[in-house]
Length: 425
Image 1 (tube, rainbow, N blue to C red):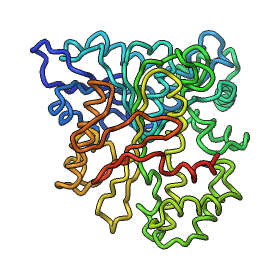
Image 2 (image 1 turned 30 degrees about the vertical axis):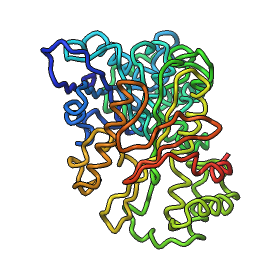
Image 3 (image 1 turned 45 degrees about the vertical axis):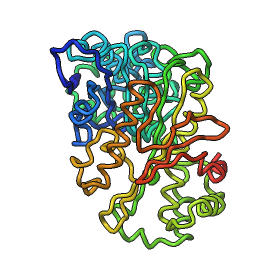
């Protein structure tokens, strides 16, 4: 019973049509919920921007993305995407009902972080979602594709085998208690990944590019295609996966230790890095000469490469793209938290004083939060991010890679890590 959503609105009785933001939570496609942290609270942004904030929930993991179409036939043709179809159903609810909450169904922005950012891109590639949103903001989770249908169908075979069922007994899976099925499917996925030698983020539960519910091929690759007229604002953080945040001993890592770790973990997050690790390290160190070795590692393994890939695909369409890179670092724990994965959320929503564990609170984070929420509200209302404290935010182009560096003193720069990133392929 998870198909519920939350709504924050300044008024339901003044007949106004306010811009609407629909928030898609993170957690990959396997966990999370629409109001799991105070940073997701929509009250401050709704009051400040005279807008309506909606956060949604949907089926996750094996419950939302078990592709049984290969073993179950037509009856289970959509089974690999029911979690994504839940998101479409939420947008349909917004389209039908948000006017009753003071919102404008013709001005809806979808926004998400990490797995939620990938959900934003997925919705942009779903025919059934077209017309239900008008602007898009993926944070730290941009993507240009979903799960391969053949791999997802193979995982479905493993699920059936783990359950000890034949192909004409697929429907019996629906009779199982949900928790029992969850554990069974996760065991099947682990066995599948091990036996197939799958590393990285592939081989798990997530939206399937079945060519029906989600388009085949690279998202945004066709001018005039799906979401052609939807402006996009993309952002990542500088230190998405900073491991020293929870392990202070890593702050003392040497250059050689980082290079060895990059080699060892290349198959997980960056296939092909391997022997190029020393060259890549030196390229990033040249661009960021003040960075410690552990910082260089997080810069190399960040989500920015996927963000740039998404932007370069989307600019082929008609609507503008804007790029940001969040570099603000909190003062706690001797500075080792840095600009970590999820930190920027509370800034976009003007919630820095609600997330003291992330920001430390006070005037410094509050100032950037006011600026970033100004920019988001501007994007929602006009399709262009802007704020009094920011320089002009120019549209992203593949040639220059215009990127707003969000920090105490924000600047617009042309693709600052391009030369190093080229080495990553």
